[in-house]
Each structure stands twice: as C-alpha cells, then as structure tokens.
Amino acid sequence: MAGKIVHFELVATDAERAKRFYSSLFDWKFKNMNVPGMDYFMTEGDEPTGAIYADEGGAKGAPIVYFSTDNIDASLKKVRELGGSGDDKLPIPGQGWFSACVDTEGNKFSLYQADPSVTMDSMPQKQQQETRA
Image 1 (cartoon, helix red, strand yellow):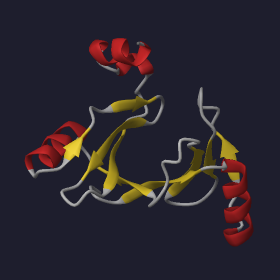
Image 2 (cartoon, rainbow, N blue to C red):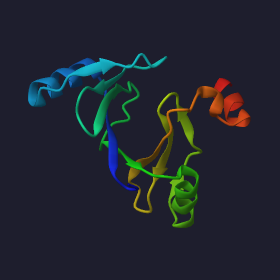
Image 3 (tube, rainbow, N blue to C red):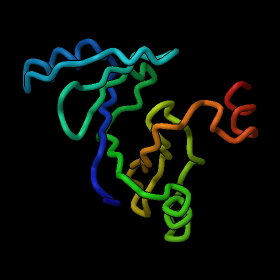
Image 4 (cartoon, rainbow, N blue to C red):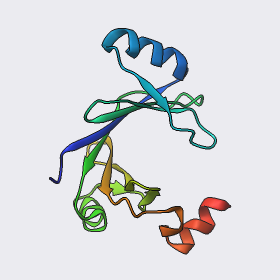
C-alpha cells in the first residue's frame, strides 16, 4: 500500500546511549547492520522497522519517516511537481530503493520501494561514479 509508514530513523549524537535509552524504555532489541562508515542499528522484530544511527555532525531533530511506494520514480517525480524536493533514488542492496525528500513545509521524509533484487550495481552508472568520488 502506497503511503504506509514502513521505516523510521532516529538520529543520535551517541548511538550507544540512544540504544540504551530506547532499549530501557520500550525493550527494543537492536542489530548492527555493519554499514560501512557509520554506526547504524536496526530494531529487531518490530513493524515498522526502525533504526538509530550516529551523526556526530549534530544533524538531529525529528525522526525521518519512510513511506512506501509502488513506483519510486513516479512518486519522486510527483514530489517535485508538487513543490517538494527529492534526491535521486539510491539502492539498499537486497531490500529496495529509497529517496530522501523534503515536503513543501520543510519536513524531511523518505520514499521506499521494496525490491529484493536491488544490488549496488543497480544504481545508474552516473550515480555510481558520483558516490565513489
């Protein structure tokens, strides 16, 4: 179903401290996703899934909510047509695609399209070169 909340992210200055907080508050369990270059921990067993990640640069605030879509390209085009903004889609290997967006009021959110066949090689060649630069 398009528009369903499928994932959320909580940005933390100290991911370990944030994990302790939410583990104690809600009895959440976390799994280290071993994302290169970042501390990224996903909740286990809950729907929708959530994650805590460290951003030492201090980019924190409201949670980032991921909304499902059946066609990320069409939804991203519509976001832009309606006056919002959205980054080009990026792959999540083995899971699907996502795009970081901002609505007309400045709220950050992301679009997510499930597609387990996605690999890093699924990314358009131009984006692969920019990501490696």
